[in-house]
Image (tube, rainbow, N blue to C red; front, top):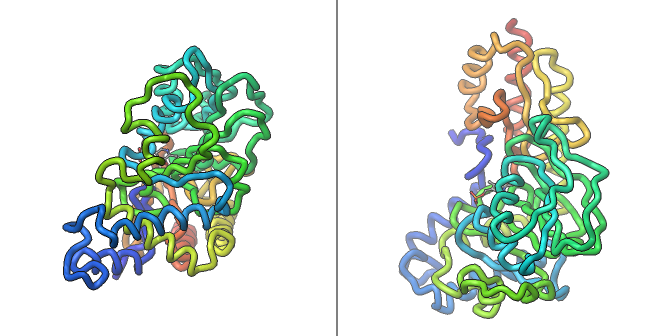
Length: 356
Ligand SMILES: *Cc1c(COP(=O)(O)O)cnc(C)c1O
């Protein structure tokens, strides 16, 4: 039987995506060829790329608003440097909000390109909350934030109104909740958290913010080059893009972001209610900033660790161990995780309570 997969990434995808992409490896589109052996310039694959790019904009409500969707290589980590390369002017500066390991990774890369202004950081509290009431300098070239902090289990509920380009790493909560995506000028996300297999990176960018730095940008790192080549500057990661398309189609069929958000809310409520009710557990993130994708929690008394670990493993749960920088447990409840899996975890938490 399939495990209840709480892995933080790569992570669970819809079962039908696994089945359809497995089929495409054997025989893609009735071509009697594998998707792995056809040209990325074939009309069949070009259609995949076009539909995937269009569906991203459709699901985010960004059609005909001056945005382009790109599927690139390199993961979200490469975007940490492509963003400043493409947006920070020579001798310019950029503003960053430090909410976790990934945010600080982005800051580290930006420092190679110019001045970075740290508007706020929750590092001294081991990133257990999202700083608020910070001021974003209006003379910065852009402001960068991380919508969901995968490791620490916090999520931004509000985004500042600023007069400069707003850039967001949405790797671990893209397509999970309704937002006014037109507030953002550049969104990026590694595929492997909510969209597809590792290997593709989604970038959604408002074209009008590009081409203003005065820098020479190497072609592979230049968003404008990728846009001009319709996301096929070189051979794209064809299989991750195809599987991402299948996930996007699944999401659209489910009713889009609005419908999945309701499910995600229900899953998060079910689990957090138990974390708060059960005297054996406590959450590690500030309540108002809790992530609906990654719930981090610990046992109040570590002496129960072995018993709890045995129980959840026996219940068919996988991937619940917390990140080493937080410890305890992390339940990643991405779009494809069914609420039934959350119920199994909640039942195990109750069972532990009754056992001891
Ligand atoms: C996983 C993750 C990353 C890193 O993604 P890669 O694709 O492995 O580079 C960056 N940011 C966030 C928020 C993440 O969750």
